Length: 289
Length: 131
Image 1 (cartoon, chains in turn red, blue):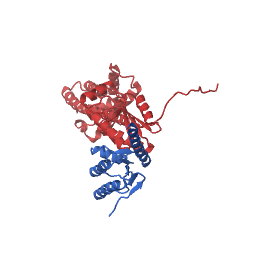
Image 2 (cartoon, chains in turn red, green; image 1 turned 180 degrees about the vertical axis):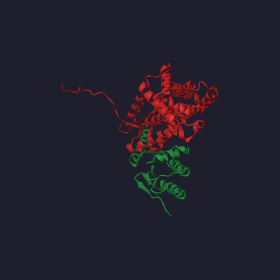
Image 3 (cartoon, chains in turn orange, yellow; image 1 turned 45 degrees about the horizontal axis):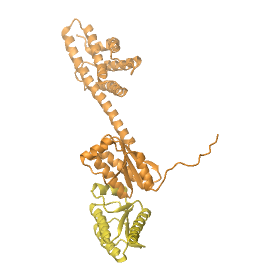
Image 4 (cartoon, rainbow over the protein chains, first blue to last red; image 1 turned 120 degrees about the horizontal axis):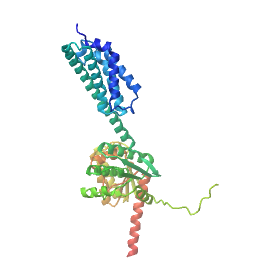
């Protein structure tokens, strides 16, 4: 009776673990800044344990077998945390691949006398571990995508605040590209705020918009027209020289819109419309002390 | 048949639309309003649409029509209290209501109308003194 791979794995669990950890520690790319040796050992040990418990002669050829669910869970957990911790795909991949090397070298020691079964068992093991590696990558990428999606949501949320700069003057700094979806949000927020505060002037500051093409200009014109329909006036500020150049080169007509170079000059203009005056006080304030 | 009341306030006409404007009602309003402007010699028309929540392109056109007709009869039109959703809809329909003055609420609308009439009268006086 030839030795089966599962029995070998169970018997030599600790030496597999030692070899694997040795492999990982000797690797030049070990990120001991991201993960401590203890943590590494703990997660490796957990994986080897679970694999040894669940592997048997029947399921070795079927990576989708239900027996491997706990194993996959652990692999997925490890790759997800690694994706969040900022490991590179290569490092995460090598983590699982390293286990394969360790198991294979143990197999070699155990089956030295029987090359045929060594080859057969090795092939099975390689296939199984390859499947595990693929799953690792899939979950790793999924983890990364979650991070990206969360960041996109956060950017969309933080970038449309409506600020009340003065009684009757609202300011709306736009940061990031203006697409249709964002214009909709910006427009709704602005109009809602105009109704709530009864402001008659709104300043749309586009200094944070990286580029203006005809579509973005279209969106800006729409927002200005909607504000006018509500009975308020909208001033566009923060137009950089490059943006002015592109707008003219594209042949976009912004002559119906009040445009100012900076938020300060827009505010000044708004004050003049509201017949407000900002001036220095003549008298020095007497301060205590 | 339903009619939207048109109130007279000095040199201005005040219309508040409190119900959803269906097409026939809007057409009646248009003709009533023009008649009224002609009869009273009003200098301004103030339309309050703060209670209107749904508009279509027809409604947008009627408002534009009223403004143009009043303009011919020497009266300015101010639309006040438009809801944000209505404003967005009109823009998406491609109806920016050119030639119509807008204000946030009735009070500001009245202020706007008064300032426009004052301006006109000032100009008239200037012209007379020039002569």
